[in-house]
Length: 214
Ligand SMILES: N[C@@H](CCC(=O)N[C@@H](CS)C(=O)NCC(=O)O)C(=O)O
Image (cartoon, rainbow, N blue to C red):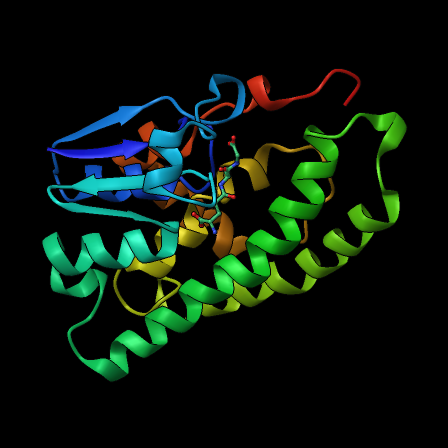
């Protein structure tokens, strides 16, 4: 039995839970982090000295960092296409997986979403929101073009790149701001929603994260 430590509202926990469900793995998840607390106990810090979620336990393996966890799970339990056995094919999947984290999540999640939902309007950094939106206006059309050409972000089949990227789309499409026109991305998001594991683990409401006055 795999154990995942982390609240379901965490955008770093969600891709891990979504992947576990897609792979049919038996998982027990523990509510840790945010309002649940528990990330500063000696027991938790022994698992992750950074005090961050998610933490994965699989037998005698304990690890953190969501991207590394996804790679581990796909390598250990995955179907080939998710994390391709060919180095060259995998390199492209990996590139887009990192792009989704280091560009899309950094700009959308940590600037737009964080400021609009997790920061009171009175202390909101409007310049930061604007810079995030400007970046999103470049990044999402890039994803749109990539999906139009290949069907999925990492290539012709669903891969880990789609887990890192796709998990951000529920927030992206539901937070109130003006989005660029991306017809192929819209269809891709609709396709993701046909997958039960995606609906269950990536479409998690975030009202419990909203701060008063946001
Ligand atoms: N690079 C790490 C980032 C982990 C991270 O920042 N997790 C956040 C939640 S999304 C966290 O632990 N925040 C403190 C908390 O929820 O209490 C990863 O990808 O796993």
